[in-house]
Length: 175
Image (tube, rainbow, N blue to C red; front, side):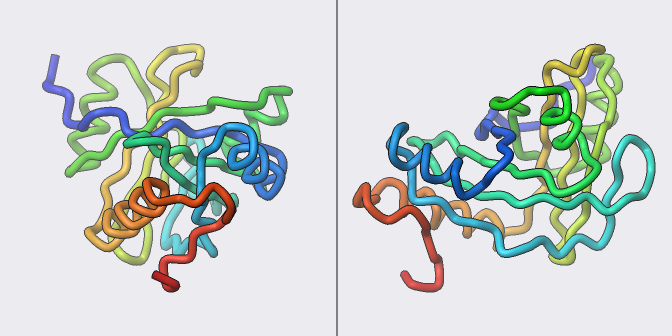
């Protein structure tokens, strides 16, 4: 078996029907915050179950220690929407970062996994979601990220460490 080309798991992602309500719950009940809400995504290409297709969703992230908590609200056909349509809520996937998407996909296929969905962004970053089990109950997101994205995540992590417990949202331009 090929060596696993991804780093440690660093994120847990939850599917939610209402991003704003989910942010309220996570900040008020779980004490996780503040959340950065992505204003949109500059996708230059996306695919869903082997077909080129625009994948739309809203997302927000924060940290609990070193663990990134991602909240995703589906907004069209995607593996995210499938999850909610099946009557499920909650944990959808785990994420790890990698340096090479092609090597990662080769490794996934070598261990019996398959690509479900992915996207490439204008800054050169890429993400892909892989079913690691035949029944698709374990999904691994892999991110090949540019330094600017990693810098944004570092700023969000620092905001979470210093969080006052009051503000729901994080604006990196205000720091």
